[in-house]
Image 1 (cartoon, rainbow, N blue to C red):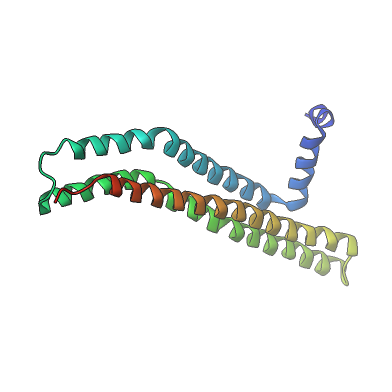
Image 2 (image 1 turned 90 degrees about the horizontal axis):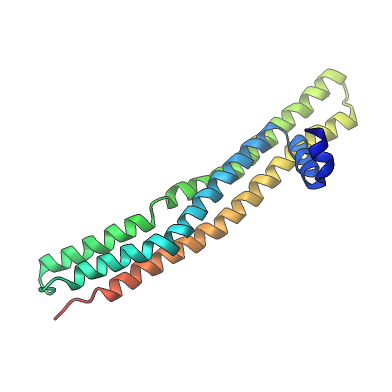
Length: 178
């Protein structure tokens, strides 16, 4: 395993970063991977499967002979809603992951500061080197959590706008006959 790190300096830097940030950084990393997996799943759905669902809903609407009554309006709303529900399928989970990232960073801050206080309690006035290590374990997860959350916020906002636009376009294409 060590030879792998020496062959790829980037892997060694990542390992050092995770060691510097402590155990909470690993949790932030897993949470970030889950969040981005969900984001990529939504992007792939919107690009590949949503157009088929939209075409099927439009075809079902266009196949209706009568499109003016209250009943037809309710069917139109049902079609739009079912397509929109599929579009918004994992958006709440993505938003939850975005919200959890800075909270996990805060957990890293607290655990790192506890280590600093432990060093101060054991060594008396405090060993500056050990205190610095505890402070780094406190600040690195905070930074990582914020960076992960910012990237998630940007993509979550993009997906929210895209979902809203797709819903509005579907509604515009499903015209009611007068």
